[in-house]
Image 1: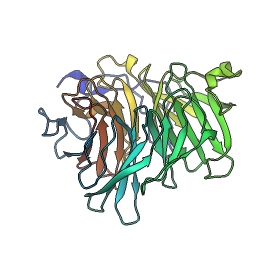
Image 2 (image 1 turned 60 degrees about the horizontal axis):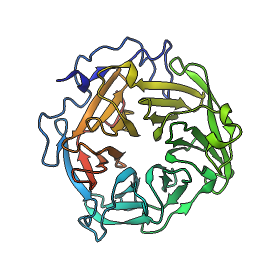
Image 3 (image 1 turned 180 degrees about the horizontal axis):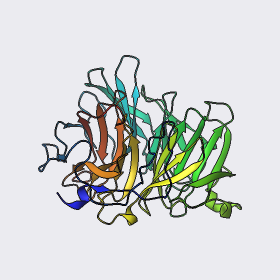
Image 4 (image 1 turned 60 degrees about the vertical axis):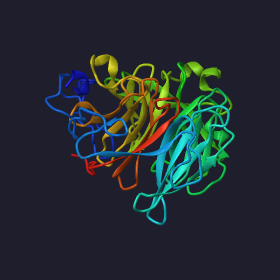
Length: 388
């Protein structure tokens, strides 16, 4: 197997890490990088694609849930173009909903697929219309989907994934080229990425939790070496314009092309595409680390970092925008490995990776598919439920 299919990654910093409430990433970077002695936790990908064009590890299967422009089987709803960021939501009947953004203009918005407790598609419908370039977003602890518009005057829209409807604009979360948002239910704050070359990393503190009507928006200021463990403090900014356009722009730190953002276990993970990095901010300490930097690992399988999610086993899954269309994962035993690969989609990108509430199914999309029409997949198999 080619070296890019798995590469050990460590030595990003000299000290031990203490990320998350359980110190999950402690000592991840204890040894120098070297080729891994074996595949990732799920084994090697198959040598040939399945019927849906996916290379998967042994024991995993795929099915196509939806194709852009076609009616979702089991519903009367045509699936949107350019499916992007997504998340799953548990429903009272034991089923779940997968919400998916549409990164198009005009009329991007969000669609959703409703599943029964057994995983059959029961319905599909729109939960947001009339918005532009809805790229990524994030789920809230109270069961709504925050959809982010990726353009200079973009906003965040809060949507109810449980039924057809129209989202509510949340201007207090800022006016900028939004990408993704992660909600910290313990500290009661939101963290947001901005997808521009001079973007910032933002924090929003609601005036009255969990209402997003008003609150304080701030941009991160990083002090120290991010490869050794830097500290973050916060600079108040106006929600009416990007931080880079405000008088205090020089007081905040530039993050080069913010992409995916996900909260798990007291840590906010996010990616920046222009320097191919995966970051981790430990909220209790304000400590910021670079978990992965492609420039430090020539031949690594992970390039074009984009959407990110975390499994029940605290594996960090990262979608690739382009490259060889892999979904890669970062594991605590110092490996970056590909989990799956979509074959034959050379002009597309992976997006919207999200686990079902029980952790047994993974959803993701090839945004432009083979012919410009997106394809949304479900992957089922023996995903690990606990951290090793």
